[in-house]
Length: 338
Image (cartoon, rainbow, N blue to C red; front, top):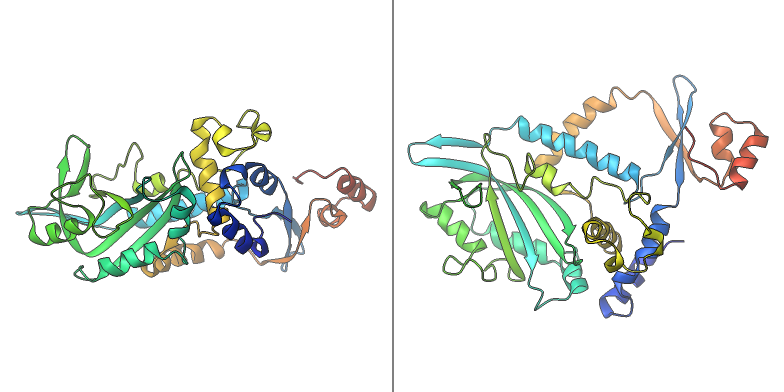
């Protein structure tokens, strides 16, 4: 049983938070977890066909594929939504992007990761404070990414019912909220100390808030074509054990080449703290369900029968191999069936 299995998580979280276990040393456990294969066995009730599909586990290719599909659906929603407009007073936008980070001098890595969980309540308190000052409601998408040091960076795509005035900043090559508008200034002053933009965010309190705004004609964010692609750049990738030289020889995440640490820390921290990959509010979910319903109609009448490991002969007999072949494949550790 993996240390990341649901039954073990409370003890693991407690050990990490107390310092008894250093999350940096859990890399070998992460590799073992991702490299363990289970398969769902399916049967088509209309045709009698059998199929086996690898179980999605955070960090493996199947999990990454699922996230990529959700990314495409969210992109489709954005493409079909008009969220900015021009007036004689300037440009107004409903869609904004934030990254919440922590002050490393005040909070440790694991403490910060705990604070953004449902038990830590930092994110829920942030939105409770924000709601008191907004005109109208909002929808949100949240993704919890890790930085190269293992600290969390909370990415939020925020759709506000009451738009903010925005203006283009050539230095950052992006749109930002424009404080010359009174309502926009009142909201912006929650996120930023307007007297000292490099100081801790008044409403977040744990560290800093970076803010970008978007227009339908200008969706780029830090080299990505839109914010969905930016926030999903690590959660829609698998930890391919063949892509990282000597990965199985590293004992710590900090032993890895720097370019791989962000992805590994993101997967590892989300496993330790049992974080949802995407936190999507009701309005976005309703649009997603409409898209998913159209896709389901095309799938056919497939049902899951059971889940088995790759050392179970039943996996191979289900796929049409003889009993003798199935026993041999299972004894040899098996290979993912075609």
